[in-house]
Length: 191
Image 1: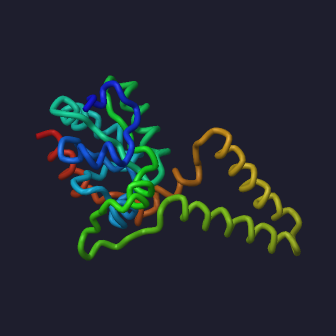
Image 2: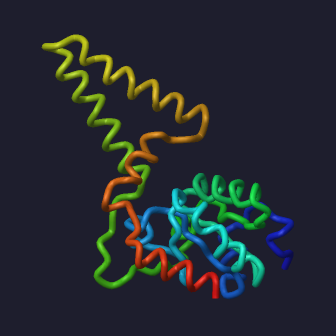
Image 3: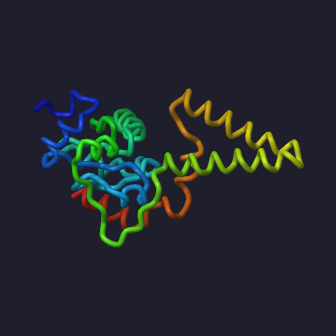
């Protein structure tokens, strides 16, 4: 099979065939990771990727890296960020959602508290803010600007394939990695 150095994305079938030879990095939040991840995957949230560069470079020196998220968007961003630092990696087309749809197994740590996927968290927050702006706007018309601002943010998000709200939500305590967990992951990748 062709090494990931010449690929940017791998399909679920390609990954399933090569899973034992890949170092899998899941760039979702710890809560999303706990809700189900590829066997053997290490969790390094996207917003911690820069601090993990030395460990990822060491892991890439020993074999092929595969970056994974829920749908493929964040893992593509991670792959592009690593490429700017000279680290070659591939991402999983369709992410864990596509992996699960094809019937492949995911692991869920025993006793881990699963958190909603980031996309679902964004939909809840955006919908709640729009609804609050519209309802409050019945008595205070200026509050409708909240709904307009969220709508504008969603349009911008779609056009740029980025999500500012997801970046803010990722900073909430339930979406943050525990320092000990991240340190253990980085040590395992470095060694």
